[in-house]
Length: 124
Image (cartoon, rainbow, N blue to C red; front, top):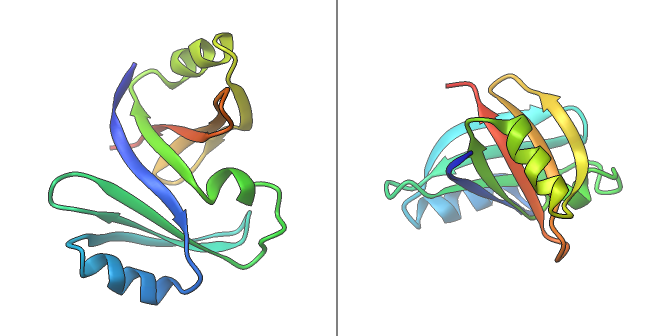
C-alpha cells in the first residue's frame, strides 16, 4: 500500500544554483549523488514540513530514461510489487522496471494521462 508522498522530481540546468534557490525556500539538502545511467547529478532535498524535491542535472539528455525521470512524482510503498500490479491492472504502464538502488528500489510508471510516477521501496 502507498504509505506517503515522497518527492517531486524536477530537471534543472545548474544543480548548485538550484540547490541554493530551494534552500532559500526552506529546503535542506539531504543527499547528493551521481547516477551512471542515465548520466546525471542529483540531490534530494526536504522541507521541515516533510515535502521533498529531487533535482536532476543531466549530462546525457538523449538517454531514453530521462523522459520518465525529469518530471515525476514519487510515493513510498510498503508493498511495491502489489502496488505496481494493481496500477498495471488499472491501465498504468511500467516504463522503468523494478531497479535496485543503494537507498531505494524503484519502479517508474506512466499513468493513463501520461504522467510519470515513481513507486519506491525506501531502505530505511
